[in-house]
Length: 245
Image 1 (cartoon, rainbow, N blue to C red):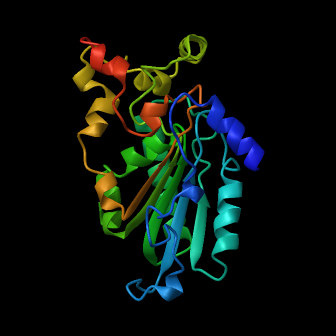
Image 2: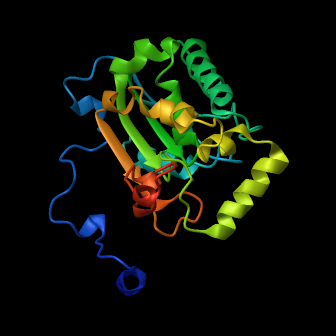
């Protein structure tokens, strides 16, 4: 492990450190605390909704689910491994948002759940669907219940400034072949006016501030989702681009 860590630091073009090596953690409280130890937690279930990414399926985040269950034995956790969009992740985000929202509400009603908390875990494109769900009127009653949002390589700022020309070309070709609305929206090409594109309008709506914890996980080795986009940061290319930056 130590050898692999040293080799990783040598390959990076910027100064970095591992989270486990930090003297102080980002939060004194765990992102998924044991509810029985939390006096403020009302009677109810902690619903954790896991949403897969592009061309994924409901099993993609099963290991994350397993790790949380092992770390919190006996907690009142209920996992919803979303599968409503797995047959068509190339649809536009509005369509996939409706599917996920219907799935969440039906799950709560089907099992007659009393919701104490709701957390979301998203991978890649699934994170945009999650943020879109938060803006829907039907979900408004659950906003006070939001707890943790764990974003794994989410293209929150789109894929417009991707460093890999090969990947950008491949995604463009896939969008043309699949006639994908979601890939078109991720590149801000769904409207001639950038301020009327889906992602720009989504950025103007409330959402993330309702969570107690927002965890953004990114990797510089990710060739599909730009590093800055997963971390919701400005990039140098965007600052220099006077057209769409």
